[in-house]
Amino acid sequence: MDLVGYGAFFLTTALIFSLITLGLNLQWGLTGLFNVGLAGFVAIGAYTSALLTTPDTAGRFGGFDMPILIGWLAAMMVAGTAAAVTGFATLRLRSDYLAITTFGVAVVVQLVALNAQSLTGGPFGVGFIPRPFATLAETPLLFNLSNLSIVAVVTLVVFLALEHLSRSPWGRVLKALREDERAAISLGKSARFYRVQAFAVGGAIMGLAGAVQAHFIGFIAPDNYVPTLTFQVWVMLIVGGSGSNKGAVIGSILVWAIWAGSGALTSVLFTPEQQARAASLQIVAIGVMLCVILLVRPNGLFGDMPRPPRFGKPERKPVADESGATP
Image 1 (cartoon, helix red, strand yellow):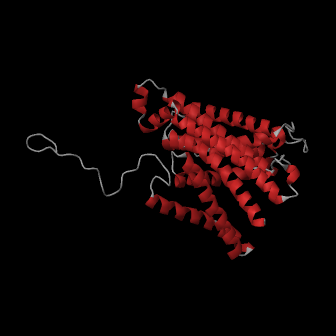
Image 2 (tube, one colour):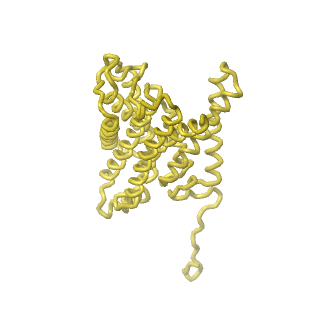
Image 3 (tube, rainbow, N blue to C red):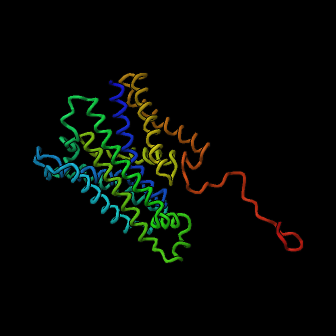
């Protein structure tokens, strides 16, 4: 029974990561927007839902004690709006410049969460966040299975919605902008308009994931949204395959299994005094796995982005003969 309960807990956490990865896949895999500030949008969603739904027990701003569903919807709206504003201001930038800007946004969000103590609780975070099925907490197995069911439903709804959007005319425009922006613009499509939309929708999904995670754990703090989160999600997308929603979900589950498994292994093999040093083995395990997958499948397990050219085998161009004809 304990094994089943842990399995439910593990899958719930993996599916929450899947939500974040699905949002990133919309931004990067479908549209080509290099966002390394996703932890900021996850934090915005988490704090928005927490402040709206948590009872006022610490004299902090908020404490509206609203239903959890209202908190989740508000998290999507606030995070989506923040992503739209960020996108409108920064999406004229490209590649590494956009990455630096979005990383700066994430740092700003974390600093606000750390220092605005009257609003966010500062370094102490927000506790007593209401959890779905809290009345079942005395039965851990039933509680974990119930949480798994609701997170699975939310992930399935988001997955199906993104699958529909990716096949719609809107999704085809995003792919066209990713592949050849000039050709898409020549057909009358506004690159900036569509990119801001994709960035906003992806940010809203990340905000929803942050809200779901906050209510699943029951506590949030600024330390939950450090760059390690961004690293994990990017690895999940790369392993699963950029451009594939199915790859985003499977990659998240696979990488989280390796991350959690390596953490459990180090806790068994190393003493408590060695834990801090041994924790770096998790990064090593993920890095080795990433290298192996990229060597075997450069596009990830299910990726549909263009395959990069192979080193050492340049493309051969046809050579004209003496008569001017090409073979």
